[in-house]
Image (cartoon, rainbow, N blue to C red; front, top):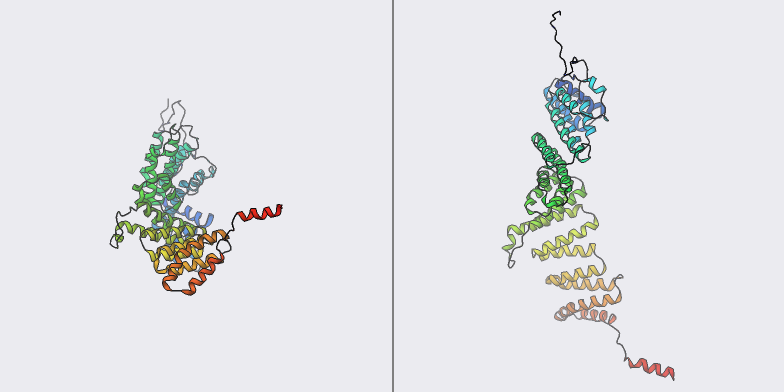
Length: 452
């Protein structure tokens, strides 16, 4: 046998191992190349205003509508790669893995690999290893691949493609994987990840014969992490509903809603957030025992009532007309609880005159008259006027309301010696007075005459 300087690697069956398949050899990409691929994608393939606005900060020269940047600048490379990685992560956590992986492939600088992959392809574990090695100089992309991997496991368990029943071990292992990379993600990405993992824990508990949400501590811990990191109102609201009325979470819930306020501009969401914050402060309120004094009104517990009132007033600004009615009622209750009669009078008056009609308005006016002695005559007279002119209240109900008004207004007119007021009141009461009935025997007398 002739000697050669060459050696051949054989597999377990004795066949030579070949390395000429381009799919098995994906060359390493340099940061400049990856950055240029991402730059091409977000400026030409799918233009992104946020990307372009960020890129302008690195411009060396700006003329008219043209900007000049250097692909050799490490800062430009880091910005491009970081932006691309963020989009991959966000897309994966938004449960759109095919699109996330498609972005990964688009950012690769290996044309051989790209020719065989599109948005509909299935990424295998072998693919992930090769792609990760390709991005060895772009750890940001490698991180995004880690997030994609976690989300892929979550999806395969939930849709049943893994062929395995969800177990506690699997759920915990997925969470541990995410825990390892969570510190490298921003707050909202962490929240999204733990939110998705909480669904796994919830699905695991539902598979048990005796389903008791209160026992699902693993899900609760994930939801608490979502509250800790998220500013997304919808996610926060979901967590609050799942965690239930647990006062131990109130501080985290309030902090989450406040973060949400800082980034939200949608009026309907602002209404909901302020309304929810008001309810949080009410839930945290513990009433003061004993008589209410000026000094007791300044304690910490009553500060919670004031904060609740503040958020209800803010919610009122963004609420629709039907929702404003309920908010005003809540504000009035809080003012009454704090014994702020004059403030309560203003709120109750607004409620009566702008939101209520007919009998409801009159009862609200009588409520003010009964609690605020300073303005009692004015509110009784307004209630009298509203009752008389109302077309929605029938005759019998008017009599009842007028009787109540007369009961309180007549003594005031008498004390004031208001003859004109008493005269007007008498005329109204006479008009609505019950007709005096005759003797029942008269009916029989008439019938007897008819018979004769």
